Image 1 (cartoon, rainbow, N blue to C red):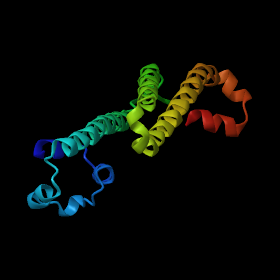
Image 2 (spheres, rainbow, N blue to C red):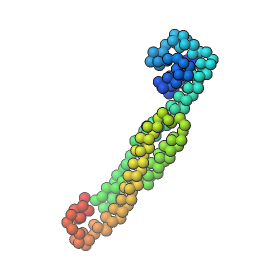
Image 3 (cartoon, rainbow, N blue to C red):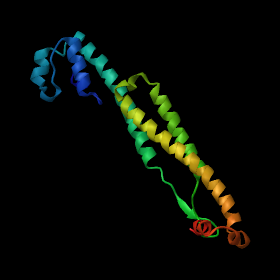
Length: 175
């Protein structure tokens, strides 16, 4: 009984579920060994019910750990910058790798969405999914912008073209 009740991930909602299934009022904040024995939770039938709830708690805990790991991994992604060869423009390095990394995160969140034990963690999952979608969209757009900018920048910095451009454009291209 004690081993079962020490299940990782056993949250107040699980204690409430145990209480409802057994027809008991169990407050996890005020549970004592005496109270557990008094309620007869060591009884085989009651213990079977408790084990069923603990199995659910264990599965939900695994999903929670996966979500937390994904969130931590995603937030630790680093964007590296470097100057172009002419030293006038800063670009984001390894954009394709970043895109692949965030696409993988998006796939992982999709797998977690299909897990039947995610229902109590759906708000957190949707928040992480939204962040991943936004970053992935931004990185894809930035990759396209950077590719075009670097290509065109080489043309517009030529001296003959610079002379033909308006002053505002020349200032922008020199930044």
